[in-house]
Amino acid sequence: MNSFADLLMKAGPTRLFAALGIAAVVAALLFTLVLRMGGEEKSLLFAGVDMSEAGEITQRLEQAEIPYELRGDGTSIFVARSRVLEARMMLSADGLPSRGSIGYEIFDEPDALGQTQFQQNINRLRALEGELARTIGSLDGIASARVHLVLPERQLFARETEQPSASIVLQLRRDQLTEGQIRAIRNLVASATPGLTTNRVTIIDETGRLLAAAQSEDGAVAEGIDSRQTATEERIRGTVTDIVEGVVGQGNARVQVTAEMDFSRVSETSERFDPEGRVVRSTSSTEETAASNERAGGATAGANVPDPNGGAGGGAQNNNNSSQETVNYEISRTTRTEVSEGGRIRRLSVAVAVDGLLAPGGEGAEPTYAPRTAEEMQRLTALVRSAVGFNAERGDVVEVVNTQFARTAPPGSEMADAGMFAFLGDLDVMRIVEIVAALIASLAFVFFVLRPLIGGLWRPRRRQGRAAAAALL
Image 1: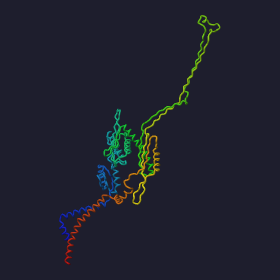
Image 2: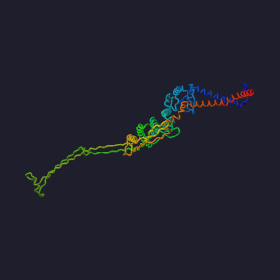
Image 3: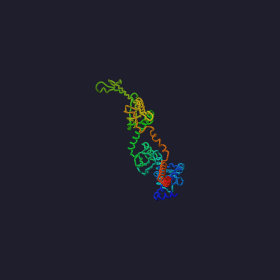
Image 4: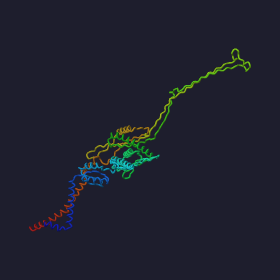
């Protein structure tokens, strides 16, 4: 004890306080590590929660005496794994998280007496906006959504009415949405809002990037044409991809289709007359008879005296007969009207790239690439032409090329590289950091505190032993 006290006196206050500080830090780290290792592991309850709702959720968890932990920027809430389901059911019963939108539950409570028509209309608009925002937010790739509707009221004695419109702000889970998803959102909102058309729906994301702009009628027609052309190309590409990948394997074919289409609407009317198919429509007949007498000689007084024998004097009698018949025929007539809607394919171009074969190499060797045979490529070309309805007269082009696809690494190399550290994927990174920090602090305490102290205790005894050995000699 005297030797230890002497050592402390020789160390001085500076070294003594430094040693005590290091010992306290190491003890605190070890104590924290023991508590965290002994405590129950926490699991994610909600992520990406609004700050306002995060406060309501944490307050409700405190009332239920459920320990929680906020991580990240305060929008991720973790609770004990054994109480995750309990917490979610409790919060769901309270309508949390609600994504900040109010739906038709606004009408659950009875209206206050004397509520005006304006307040009722506003509540109806808020409910419709909230329900649409919830529906859009439940789609894949969308974290949350806000919907703003403009529903003009119809004015009395007004000849023209304003058209409704909608604006949507999306918070995406990934970089962008596909054209099909954007069209689906516009159609969803337009179908749920009275009088709203898809060309009056504007969509932007949280960064202010325009995803879909409101358009006039001409713009809507142009967008419809582009959509029909894109749908035709996607349909043909899907057909070709299915049949080619069924032969060469999934992921071994790339297909691109370009369709030149004619969207003009053509109407033709033709009439055809059949002379052989005539039918009598009407018949008209006329007959005429006329008689006249002619006398010989000049005009005298005796000529005016009647003949006692009853004759009129010497002369000739003329009779004229005539007949006429008119027949009207109705000729057979055929009228034909043909209307050709737009959307005809004028020309089709199809490009197909097919990967070759990979022959497995020897032990430790990379696979070797082998191109496909000409006969196999001819069969693939024939399949593609049959699938797309190839028509040489309209100038269709189909190209099927065998080429080697680019590969960043040989198959299986990623697993080989991660094999040594694959076990880290199942561990908590924060716990690993805490363990390493505790080990470093413990080693520092041993080498910089305990070792000098122990060395100071043994140094006088070593000197005494050496002195005793020298005296014996």
